[in-house]
Every structure is written in C-alpha cells, then in structure tokens.
Length: 93
Image 1: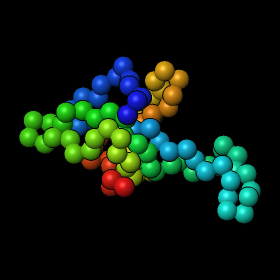
Image 2: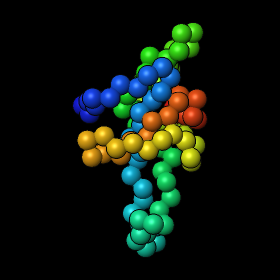
Image 3: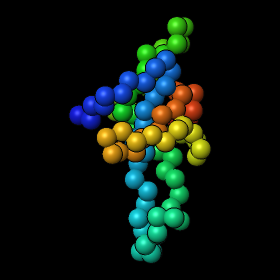
C-alpha cells in the first residue's frame, strides 16, 4: 500500500484501518455520528513478523473482518487505526 507509517507492530500485532461507517440508510436517512455502528471490516496497513513458531498470515492490503470490540484505537499522524492481535481477526475477505 502507498500508506507507509512510522509505526511497526511487534510479534503477532496488526494495524488495521477501519472502513468508513455508512453515512445513510438504504432509505436515504442520514445517520448522526453518535448512532453509527463501529465498522467490523478494515484494511491491514502493517503486520508484525509473528511469534517464533507462528508467522503472521495476513499481509498489508488484506481486507479483514474482526470482532466488534477487537483491538485498541490509536491515532497516527491524525488518522485513526486499530492495533490488534492477529487472533482477533475473524476472516480475510
């Protein structure tokens, strides 16, 4: 990806850029920020090397699904990301 960060995740950690939350419903109703669901899909921005006997299987650019409360929110250079263990990722889409 073209988005290079000055942060490198360690061990089995992965940095994910969450997908944008939906702005409107199918009927055209605009949803305020406070009522939006947290997205559970995102793009892997960086991945650590893995543990000694368990290499990380996701790679930069993968679109992944993760649990609703997975990861820790971090802000890097004004953008919001999630940092989570690879085990918090449910699937690669």
